[in-house]
Amino acid sequence: MRWIFSLFSFYALAQPESGPGVQVSRRRIDPSCPDADLGELCDEDCFEKWIKCKDGCFSSSCERQCAGEWTDCYRACPCDELCPNGCENCANPICSCKHPENDPYFKQCLKEAGVRLEDCFKSCATNNTCYDGCYDVFDEEKSFCPCMDNCPMGCSCDGGYECQTHVMVLGQGTTYYNDFPNFSYLISADGDFKEKRHYESPLNVEYGYLFGSGHAILRGDVYFFGSIEGQAKKISKLSGCKILNTGTQLVAAFNALYGSLATVSAGTESVILCNGYSTNCESFDGEKSQFISSTQISHRESCMAEFENAPMIIGSYSPSSNRVEILTTSGWQDTAPHLHEIFYHTCLSVSNGVLTIGGYLNDGDERGYTKNVYLFRDDQWAKVGVLQSPFDLASSIHFGENFLVFGGVQTRNVERAMWDGQNVTSSMIINEHGGDCIRPIIFEINLDSCTEGCDDFCYY
Ligand SMILES: *[C@@H]1O[C@H](CO)[C@@H](O)[C@H](O)[C@H]1NC(C)=O
Ligand SMILES: *[C@@H]1O[C@H](CO)[C@@H](O)[C@H](O)[C@H]1NC(C)=O
Ligand SMILES: *[C@@H]1O[C@H](CO)[C@@H](O)[C@H](O)[C@H]1NC(C)=O
Image (cartoon, rainbow, N blue to C red; front, top):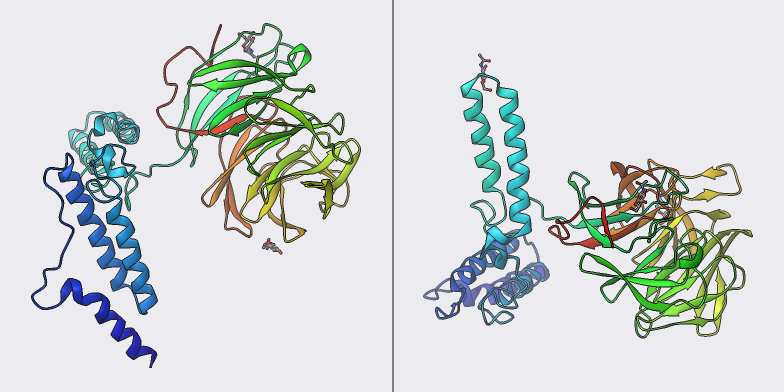
């Protein structure tokens, strides 16, 4: 019965495209559309993907899904429904192929292939056959760059250059401790590409302007909160490649060593900050910051993450604690305590849960700096993995099936962990920064951002 049904629906689906006398139709692209050529190419690609998808199906639901994907695919092509004016205001990656010479991924792909070509040349010495071989490899690699022969749709293509996420990493040092250098670099999600980038920063002669600042992303803008000494209430913001003091102040002093913060999206998005040396917490909405209800205990050197649109604060150094509180409409409430008294950890929101990464466990057999990762989900905590490095005052960021951890003080490693939604399945050290930093400032950014300027920071 099921077989008959699926056979039937196969015909129902297939007939309009492949019935006798009916052309196997692709979409008709309006030739007067400014990017009709890219539209054609895109449509062809969607069509081929659809054929491949449905050929792999053994059920009508699978075929329906393929058909749905096909529809989503062609609707997003230049000159189709979602992009009626061709590549104007069109998010389709194929539009980067209109002017590949301006596309950062295309340029990066060529640059990386070029570096390998040079290395290859160097290994050849006086052997001309070897030089020719290098060129052949370069030609092949180039053909897999976005918009080239083997990758005509732009980013990313099967077997070709991977157009990955990139993360900016900033840290400013202090003259008090030599271990804390100034750095600002961009790194690819796989860690293979790392390059200096440049920001304009207010000068603070005693310690870096951002030293000890917490950071959070609010409606797409990167904000910096507090610092040390007389600078501990300032709220600053990134504007392009320039760090600006907003002039707005926190109610209470804040620094990233004691305090915790997270962006939460309940109602309008806001940044929640608890300073850790007291039970005071405040909420910054982009305009002003004001006190909200206080936590039950002070959570010093702990961390905060968003859980179900509310802030969750985990652990504490002083008092040493495993307590976990969540902000509800009736104030901060305890939820299941962490498996350990914990501090110096970093935490990260994942689907239906929150992770703690590294930190110091202050009880049990594993007391000390830890490589462990713990997950809060369904009102309970579980150990879900072990990293390579014991992270302390680190920062972490999550995308796709990976999260990256940027070392703070115990280790300067940058580590990438594979997260399958349940467990850390593997983890590797992919890079490092050249010095300590209290909670490195990290945020996703375009590959070609802030390439011009002075070493690390230009101070003004
Ligand atoms: C020159 O390079 C080619 C290709 O790399 C290699 O097969 C060949 O053995 C080399 N010849 C000599 C003399 O080293
Ligand atoms: C970081 O930059 C500041 C400001 O120019 C400078 O005073 C300080 O020496 C730098 N720190 C290091 C470790 O180079
Ligand atoms: C995977 O995670 C679950 C909780 O999400 C935990 O119960 C289980 O022990 C973990 N497995 C491994 C191999 O760590």
